[in-house]
Image 1 (spheres, rainbow, N blue to C red):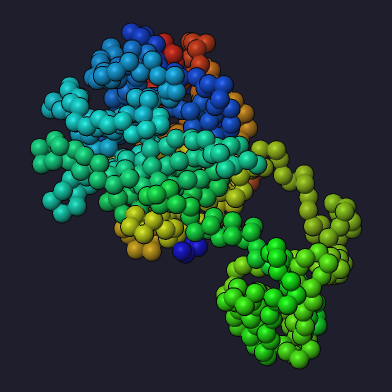
Image 2: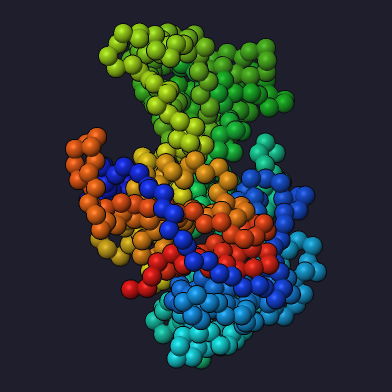
Length: 578
């Protein structure tokens, strides 16, 4: 596993960017009433964790076909997948039913929100929210408008899930579709945490030569303790990329624990405990019932130890970490029914990393006196005062330079790529304070882009695993947007145009904020403060919907913003085509 980093393209940064200028230019906005309300599924009483809220409570119910950006989809309360197309520059067509779930999804008590992902120009992966996966083949007219959705595969997989991502690819002569499914499952072993874990299931499905006879080829699972900000399969299905606060690990076909977890449990049930001083190493292990002093056999040599009980094979033996004075080493039987073995170090002062080379059965216990001595040695590097010496030219910390919106609770977030064959992590990036902002599909044939905060800016990254050493390419920058968005406490959805011409975020109700990239001005302005001419400006615009219903979905194309509420779909014209 390699630790990597994201390489920023300095040419895409603007250190002289000032701010977004509020523009009062009108934004054309029009809408269409829905035949039936959008199928919002509210959280149940047993879905009370932050992960439930992130995965299900903040779900985006509006879906955009990236191969036809002016075509949007949603599922209504009647179990119908509805399609709305932009017919004219300032008009929407009426909602058209393209597919209906075969069963009544509202009858399922454990139902989640219905979800979908456009796998390719002619395939869609669907979930009804009750645990059934659907594969749909799309027939299109010459105008690239979906006219027929044909069910090719449906299978009950178990617990309800939502579809995160899917790809279609070829393996030799076979055509396959891989889908990534998310669910939050009860974890009976997690007694100290939330009591749940997040499950990501990676499913491979083969398709027949005539897009029929689809069947599941492989199922793989990953478990983690936080809902991923981003999870996507590579176009050729050779790998998987996840951005999450807590790590994910592959689970074996039999539900086996990952090796790291097994080692952690073994460490909790240590065979012996050991501590050390400058002169010696002491290890202690409990005695089983019925064992007396005569049953104990401890053998020392300058670089080896062997301990056995009751004339059985040694339960602890091996090569010592460093040489000892075996004649000065000894063992005693304590009153607490345990054996204490003292190994006299030959090299006094040498710090041992372990007792027996390669042995993981022991647990090191730090000596309190040693801990106190180390703390005292480090005391000069710390202080209880924020700035004990105010006359110093460079104070150690100035808390006033950090604002509340600069603080991230997820400084441990990582970007991790898993190999599809070995199921192991191959590349890891510690994102630290680079807060995850949003993801979007910029190029349908590629993996989704993701946006991270970098200082005050919002940087967009495009995964490019087939292009040399660079796994993630810096594709675009929204100046100061990382800082600006942090002040929007009520934001719900965040996205940008596929051509990166503008970014937009919406609040839970009504208001939408649009941030445009800098564009040339007809009149050059003069910045008196810096003594320079300003030839371009970045505009900010605010739109307010004529609805008090909560916003359930939010999508962006290069020209338009689409907003879904319970009873209506709104379209905001942002750019002019061409």
